[in-house]
Amino acid sequence: MASSHEQSAALPARFAFVAKQELLAHPLAAIPLKRLGAVFVERFDTVRGVEDTHALERRAGAGNALVVFAEGTFREPPGVLPFRMGAFLAAARADVPVIPVTLSGTRRLLPDLSLWPRYSKLTVTVHPPIIPAGANWHAALVLRDTARAVILAQSGEPDATVR
Image 1 (spheres, one colour):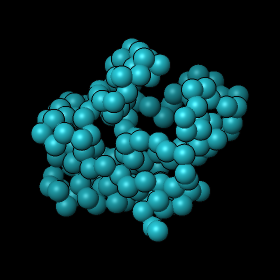
Image 2 (cartoon, rainbow, N blue to C red):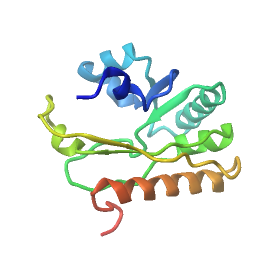
Image 3 (cartoon, rainbow, N blue to C red):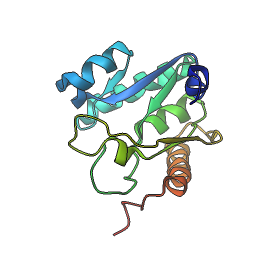
Image 4 (cartoon, rainbow, N blue to C red):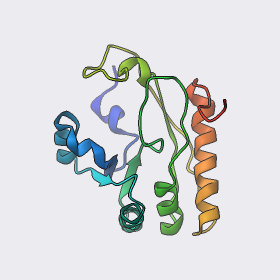
């Protein structure tokens, strides 16, 4: 078993989880996320989403690492979903790298609609940083697409965008 130092070695000293606003309606998720200092973002209201992206950009620019689950949700069928743009746009504008992390085994560990995790092996793979090549939309698209390709290749899951 890894020591607590080894288990947290992948996270920087100052970080915040970014979570979807909908989780605030679920106490089992909201309470621990609030205690961890999570940042909640709106995914469906465009104006609020733009404001939240600017707030993420300011946090990243101030040296705070953001832990973002770029798919924005978790569902039962296997497959890596499309990645949402907010975190990648914030990273490009703040000129900070994106460090893709692949979590393998999460579907077995926490099946959809289950309140309790199952015993299961979870593998965390931290990939090399991806440096933004600009501060515009195109640079953010490159960050998103590159990070998704790296994670998809390592995940062992199908591409959920291919039908």
